[in-house]
Image (cartoon, rainbow, N blue to C red; front, side):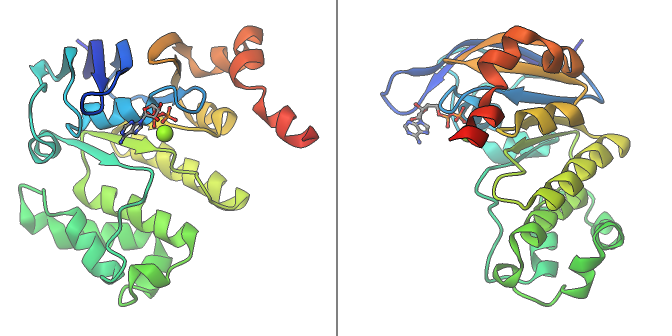
Length: 244
Ligand SMILES: Nc1ncnc2c1ncn2[C@@H]1O[C@H](COP(=O)(O)OP(=O)(O)O)[C@@H](O)[C@H]1O
Ligand SMILES: [Mg+2]
């Protein structure tokens, strides 16, 4: 049994059209999986649907054998799925420490909180240095470290990241993907969406391509990177960006 199974999921916003048009996808225990695909393919919509922010119109989301359809986002977090949306969702006027504590609000065992916060500080010394500062005073890279630190405090079974590298300087991006690998080493399973397809796949064990609301390819991440058809259709953006 896979940790997460998405079966024929159809979803959309309000009374609008179907954005996900029958997505099938599995996430295995302990892997890092990277979803790539063009803008508007439905990648964020898929993560939002798994997180319970959107209800599937058809199909099933099954986590550890339990159907999640219809559960609220807070109920889904308590089952061990954390969603780190694209728009970082820090509390800008709270301090670094307060933000880390908020990360642990869904912890069943609150006595773990201070231990986990110390561990996050050990991994991100800059957060320890700045623990009294308001989140909004941090640089973009530091804010993303804080988001990652919050995930470490909660230590979910499955962590879903939507475009974690967005807006970060190149040397920070490399660091960020190392942190994502670190999540795996600490026993978490990762499902990540990346516009930065090559680096995202380099960090991943498995990858899949979402296009027009459907999964059009999946397999080992290095296989996707080497596939000439996928290179042309979905990984060609870097070249274009250089010449335009
Ligand atoms: N809140 C929303 N309300 C209505 N339509 C939305 C909303 N968010 C996204 N969409 C639409 O859903 C489609 C897929 O968007 P999204 O899942 O964000 O794509 P991706 O993350 O792959 O770039 C787009 O056509 C977008 O306009
Ligand atoms: Mg998106």
